[in-house]
Image (cartoon, rainbow, N blue to C red):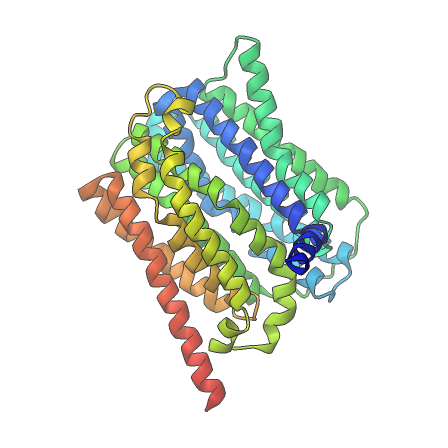
Length: 415
């Protein structure tokens, strides 16, 4: 017992504690921001914010074509000088910003142009593209150098600024409408962007051929972007085919699980550098056998969080106020989400950290396409319940595809 306690304390000191604190604090701030916006904007306007953010988020994770994840890998394996690798990541992020901004704005305007004005749409899209990419780059930079305390700070920078701004306006008796929120969102997104600029202020020479692995980067980008599709496409579809109010409530129910799954996600993030180191020595089914402890920890945590979601869901109406009467039912329908999500996270993490990021990205891209098609079909016939079923089905199909790929890898290795 004493040995286990010692191991646990050492694990916390080595970084898991910092990552957990950062992710929990960020989730708490994001949850508080959601409550403030839900109460201030009301179901319709908040549903519109959810829809625009959901669409934009898919494009945001393609910024740099996986440059941030590759930067983390290079630092974790100590294969590149940190400042030079950071400069490459910054340049790749800048190259992709304009085309992604144009595609995101066009998509939002096509879907919701009749329900918002152009300025608000552009500001909300820009806030997500700038804020997400800049924050992620700083977090990956510190994560790769195992500076977990600083990583935790940057996790909380963006949501803390936004909560403070919205709370201040409410205290002054001038709660922001959707346009006011868009101004707050873009202004706060400048903080991580300025931090990136400050970090890159000492110019590092980057040649025309900077060694960026486009294929591998695309694999990470597809995985990240597809993940966002799985998380947000259903909300955008519900907003379009059902109602903005349903989208708002579905998003709030989903947010409960974002919070509950934080200990598991923080554990995965903490283990990423170590998994990159060990991933090169195993392939196929051996990859699963050699990571039994990792898998057991995630699986056990998922079961616990699925059970906790049932009573916690009952508290949501008390926090959100009037106008959100369906949120408990939606949360109960989503009770299996920790299990299906964790199953895919296990396979995705093992593949991505063992040189199989292209396969992981391909499976997730296929899953994203399937998810969009299934969600469109099911929401059209079943409303928001169809989005839940489509999500469960997608996670199951992707996990089976990954398991099949690993089984083939084992047979090939032993042939």
